[in-house]
Length: 300
Image (cartoon, rainbow, N blue to C red; front, side, top):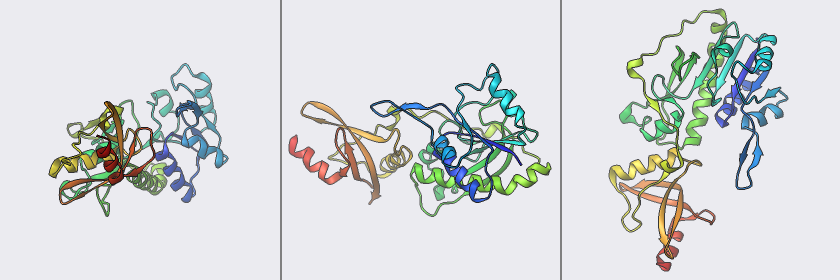
């Protein structure tokens, strides 16, 4: 059984770790090129590339998957893979590639398709409170067969996931969905190879698309003297959870006639009021919010 894996992010690494635990390792990993990161713009490989190198698996990072990349097409065809698996690759895979393997190309998508197609399914599920009891605990993962659309391919299998606590932060939900997605893939793989599964066409009438998250999406309007309450407080908490690490949830304060960004790293709801626990003021290290508040009031 020869599999090539397309991926890039931490989500992909969680998938690979779980597949490895099931004795499933790809023969080739395809990821995206190294990107400059941090203030010094150091060229940094994707988490998947790092994982591949640690696990002694060949990894390539083509800048393009388009048909003019003849060497890539030749390599993927020559190695005679039975199946391609995609998990958070971040680029559209063209037809001339996803049709190469005999058993086609499957994708692990972190939502219950056709809901939350597109660039930010995990963040969008948190922002929309999809995992709350009021919404039926509606987070989940789908294995679908890739076609030429954006997450529009027929569904092979899905799993609804009810978490013990909600809302979860993006990192925790990402790990849960990736791990469950890999387990589903391992479960259905023998039947898929035998041709015993008929994928189900998605219902386009139920499709929901989620947009790419931008830096400005993380801004929260907060009056430090009157913290938000009730629904506003809860919506702010969802934003803090969804935008963990990037783009982060943040607010601005005035200090010495200058606007300063303050990132919220931890918060909760207490008595229907948003209680901020930890923050990172611009140019400083993480601190307890009460300490920041005292310092801010003393400098006003």
